Image (cartoon, rainbow over all chains, first blue to last red; front, side, top):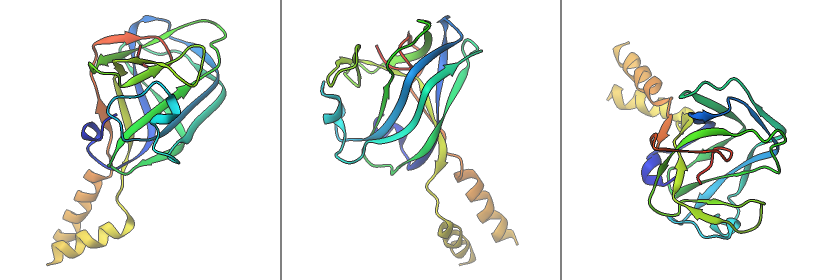
Length: 161
Length: 35
């Protein structure tokens, strides 16, 4: 996600995906993990980890089995992160998803959009490199902004003047 | 009190920062990825 698209600092608590009207309303994934971090690139390189700003790769969600069920077509569904990720509003955001298998072989489809450039990478079986893709999920970063407790005092003072 | 309420209102409006990116164009089946 480009910083110009996000447009704000945000503590990301949830990732929301929009189920497309095809495939199944349920599935499960083994060793499912989501990492987040920063990248300086607008177009990703095939080596997955080379895209990260060094030291920024952070595990935010992990399940030995991640099960989805009862997903309504055309509706948003939520992955609530185990560890909220603070995005500071500067630099592009990387969202990195890995899983080892989908035991039941069922596919949940989500809506995506064409960015016209390689802004996502995919590899199956998982490797250190992937193939560039132009399609990125339509998604919502659910969270709160970066207000700190002292902000309230600042605003109050501003109004008092 | 007015000032206090205004400040509170600003804060409550700013506290939620959901960011929607993209739109419904195609569909993909890998876990929520492109491709």
